Every structure is written in structure tokens, then in C-alpha cells.
Length: 399
Image 1 (cartoon, rainbow, N blue to C red):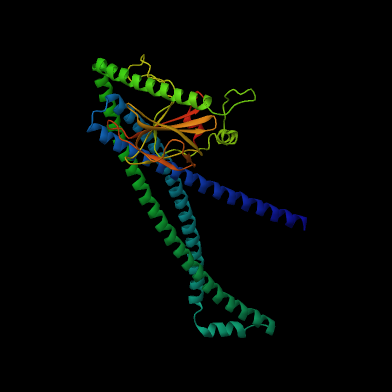
Image 2: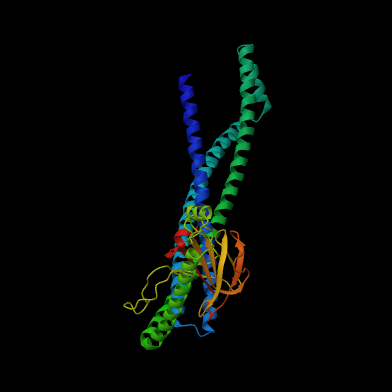
């Protein structure tokens, strides 16, 4: 009894393990498909931006930045395709093994059936069977011989059924193998197309680098103009935030003005670090922090207090958390900007063509606050998060 219990436990454990493995594989496949879909969407958005900047007076630096992001995504997509192809080759090998096993079983069944048929054929005359039964020494032996003859007939029927089932299974698995090979062919073609696109993009990138190297003075002027715009934006944001965290009509016990912060909202915002929804769906093409020029390696770019998210033209922009619209400003190079307060935290949305909220208005998470604008061929949302007067890396806050 104990031995049977142990066997049952072992079988159940094995079933659970196999079930868990199947679930894990399904989850991995889903995650891989989601990643590929996201990469393909980002590539599509950047493709559109690259087509737009060609028809406008966007700088070569902008084009180079987009191309390098495109190349990065393309390489990631090729890596995912390589995984798909490896998985497909594994499936094909497994299917070949299954077919080999089924074919071996079918051969064995056919051989056994052939022997049964041959034996029945040799003794096909019914008189032989009668004589075989009548020649029995006693009634008991006669019944055993009748049983043997019936069993032989039954075996032939069972064997024939097994052969038909094995042939049907073989045909089914062969069809699956053919489908897998066709799918693998499509995957290899897609990968080859991606490689071709990657080579073209890398060639364009190299061309832009050479162009920037020969026209350094021109792009230094562009960089200086960009720096002035960034500095002006940062000063304006800092001014608004200082006023928001300092100027209020509330007073302390001594009658002096004091800062009033929505502590509940402040705590909720802080608790959601890494979980905030994205303000819009697109690839990050301009990272937070200090960076150097992609070509002039000793030239520092203006410190980026936020991130640039490439979007399709006309994309909606949503609030990342509940809050109050503190101010709407217009800045050179950034068009309309919306600043939302969340306790002592602030989220800032720039490069909007249309604003759908007003100062003092309460907004909810996911509420549309505006529509992104296209500026000098770029359709990008500039997004920032501040904790009081300290800029934060938005990618650490967004999920």
C-alpha cells in the first residue's frame, strides 16, 4: 500500500512539474511576442519620424539620434527573431523524433499484422479449423482451441485498427512538420529583411557622422541654440515649482505663510514609483541626464532633466497620476507645456500642439491633457518628473 501511495505521489509530482513547465513556456512565449510587437511598433514610429525629418529642416544630429535608436531596436528585433528560429528548429527536431517513433511503431504493427494474415491465409480452409477443433482430446481442449481461433481473429481486427490509427497519427504529425518548416522559412525571410534594413540604417548613420564631422561649426551653432532653449525651460520650471512649494495663503501658528502640500497625494505618488503609466506610447529617443554629442565626443550636451518620447503625429498625452494643473506655459522650441502638481511631486509635459486642460483644474490618472505637436519634423513628447526642486529620471518612475 505504501509502495502504491509513493508511486501515485511521484506521478502527481511529475504531472504538476510538467504542467508548471507548460505554463512557464506559454508565459515566456507571450512575453517574447509582446516584446517583438513593442519593438515593431517603436520601429514604425521612428520610421515615420525619419521620413518627416527628411522633408523638414531638422538637424543631422536629430536624424542621427533617431537612426541610432532605430538601429538599437532593429538589433533587438533581430535577436528576438534568432530566438524564434532556434525555438522553431527545436520544435522541428522534436517533431522529426516523434515521426520516427510513430513510423517505427507502425512498422512493428505492420510486421505483426502480416504474420497474422499469413498464418490465417495458410489455414484459410474452414475444414482445417473444424478438424483442428474435432481433433481435441477432450471437451476442455476443444473449447481452448475455439478460444484461440476467436482470439486470433480478434487480434487481427485490433492490429488493423492500431495500424489505421498509427497511419492517421503519422499523417497528422507530418502535416504539422510541414507547417513548422513553412513557418521557419517565413521567420528566416523576416530576419533577412531585418538584416537588410539594419545594414541600410547603419550606412545612413555612417553618412550622417561624416556629414557632422565636416560641418562642425554649423552644428555647434545649432547646439548653442538648443542649449539656450533648454536653459530657459529649466529656469521656468524651477521658478514655477519654487512658487508652488512656497507661495500659499495658509499661515502657521505665528501668522507666517506656510507651504501646504497634499500629503496623501504626495505619499500615493511616491508609493507608485516604477508603476506610473506612460504619458504616451512610444520609444524613448532622448534619455535623462548628462550626455555627450554622438560625434563630437568631448562636447557635452545640455543636461536633460527629462526624456523624449517619439510619437505618431496627433497622439494623445495623458496625465501619469492624479493631481492639479499648476500652470500652462509656452516656451521656444517646446511649444505648449503643462505642469501638474502631485503633492510635492510634479510632472511636466512639453511639445504639445493642443492643450485640453486649464490651470487650477484637477486631473485623474490617464486623463488626456493634450495632443503632441510636430516641431521641426520631430513629433516627440518632452516629459519630466520633479520631486520638489530635484529632477527625477522618469524611466525609473514609469512602469
